[in-house]
Image 1 (tube, rainbow, N blue to C red):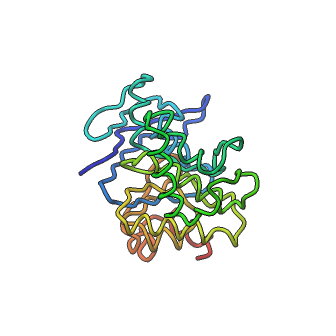
Image 2: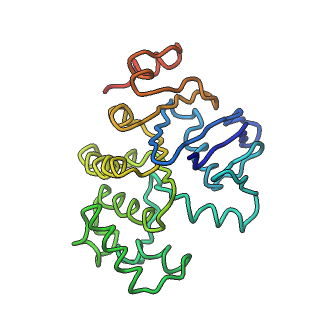
Length: 243
């Protein structure tokens, strides 16, 4: 089943055309990694999927329904499409537990006791139950990103968007976040991952998309992309990466 798709998606910032007609789809349970150089439009594409950046042209379709550029439609979409950011985007005036509970209580209007139970289960999933009652400022970057993943999962989303989730982390903290993501993939979580972690993309993805100058230049299985790239731009990009 197709969960999320785009047709002819365009996005400009001032006169700079960042996305130049993206046709994309992801099926339930699929992991799609998006790779490409800085400035290729990867993060903009992800932000457009969740309407954090408003598209200029084209359609975003969730479960066969076109999402309208209206507040009610966008709010409904975000209940089903989770997002994990580079910079965590946690509430630093709330404990870890309350961060994970926040969407359940504020958006879903769940009872606090039920929301707390679910939040604790998710903190256990990401290995952070002992941090439930501390504040984010006391935690490492890897721990913060795992909290952010738990918060995204709390809404039981149909798909989770990861925008370079390890790029703000020190190298020694990257592995703990990737381990959580790998486990989610094994559990069948539908994921769109913008990443510079080529080993992760190669190992975990069902499909890999190479975005270059706002266009999908090549896509295929990890074997096709990493071992048999057809496009010269992709070959050049891969040769510059160490993995």
